[in-house]
Length: 113
Length: 109
Image 1 (tube, rainbow over the protein chains, first blue to last red):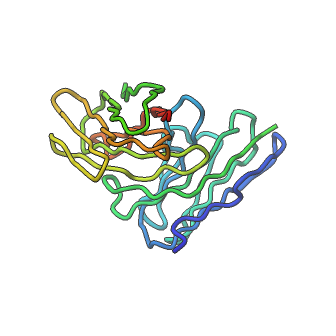
Image 2 (cartoon, rainbow over the protein chains, first blue to last red):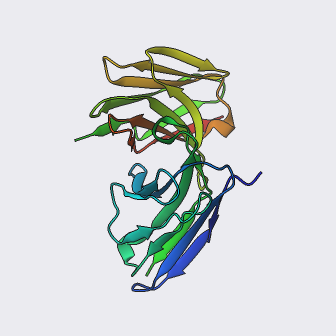
């Protein structure tokens, strides 16, 4: 049982480069989320998707974009990375949307130099 | 604004009991979660409270008082593996999840 798979697990990239973090789930969950986690701060929602074909902006969406072409995949793209986007990124899914337990991927540690 | 407050760090002794508090000020309330996160790992679900009172699950219990905007996580018979961060999160009136910064729990032998 894989659950949620994120890739890459770790990446260093130069400022200005484009980067896509991949997220795939095999639980057939409708809702998916991208969070970033920074030291001393709570998890902050970047973008979410309540069902395939729809996406929404979270608390900190600037500089990020997402797509949800199907139920399983929810990639996060940084069009032009900046050092402030250095963070740990978690993808999560939920079977019951707003009130459901979240299942998290293992995280992607991104460093922008 | 919306706010979740938790202590930044706590220390406890193996075998003891520890209570981690969480207070919240949110626009509405539709439930509260506790998650555990070991260093370098993903958060994992511990408990969910939507009604007032105590929910017990093995060594872990979670309490909620909606009138006071307050919850706590109680960990009994502490083990070294309980060393982790504990995250409190509240579902607001728009069904958005608001996260606290987490409490780092250090267990000493």
